[in-house]
Image 1 (cartoon, rainbow, N blue to C red):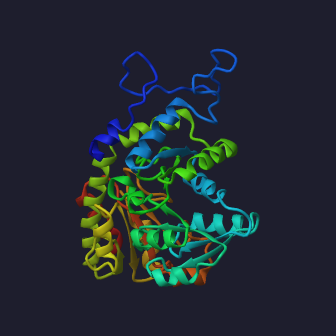
Image 2: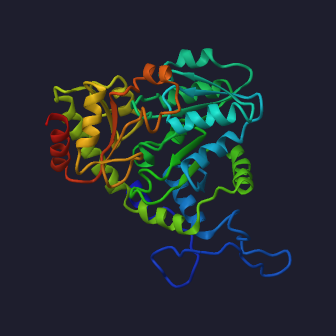
Image 3: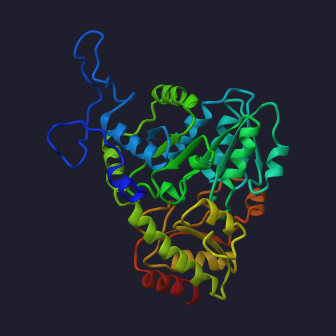
Length: 379
């Protein structure tokens, strides 16, 4: 079964006898027992719910994993992965990270949970290896990274991790399993902010995990039950509905983004464009090797901070908002929004300056989007 079909028929689980094409929303917190010592397989919705189980099965199948879990947000999904570790454990992080992940690791898990983290250029395998200590337990990567679109060689990182008996956790939010399958490249756990491309409509918060390592199944399910940040039945149904169109949406996102990246690259007032689909991108060949597409997000650098603010205030179709992956195109200003909690020196060393704008390209007509950008940039 191809992924296009998996998006629509990705789970064969059946829960009713009516022949309903749409999966029912089991809006129930509690399920009764047939008798003492007997169960239907569902007891309490924090532990499992049929509608949530269906979307979890779809995610696992799309990622070619052996299991999946659904959460109330992407950050809840990442938080649960950190609960696999104990005080004193060390985790290596790719140094291009979403600001919310950075905040979680350094303001919560370092201070309150006794974990330690090291940021490293994940494109340099020797640099990663130098940071491995006896306390190192995992490598966490985000590829492409948010917002400067750095691409990590997933297979190379996974091979290094396996040689040192480390877990690899990969954030696959930007490309989704439609374009990239990290588990097939050796990753142990894949994490998603389902709010973004998987949901695709800017109307539902969600997060997901999928994994390939059987030793993790019981641990992850136990933590999910205990911590309780599970996706509601209705939001699970919304995600099932959304993923049915994932393949057609991702194709349109990428087509629009590639054309806009090329257009921006020819604008005199734009200093730099970050998009893995451009042949000038330093990791273009890696992208071609490990993914089947380049995604629907790019970033670009204006000629000054004043010019960046003018663009943010000058668009009319594209909206100024702090998210990505929806049908609507959104501009985000990382220095004040997604990455504001990262110290200024660290931000700027990664290229996240007051000139940088992130663009999540939606499903609108390409001509309308470029006309909108042209007016904001050049008027």
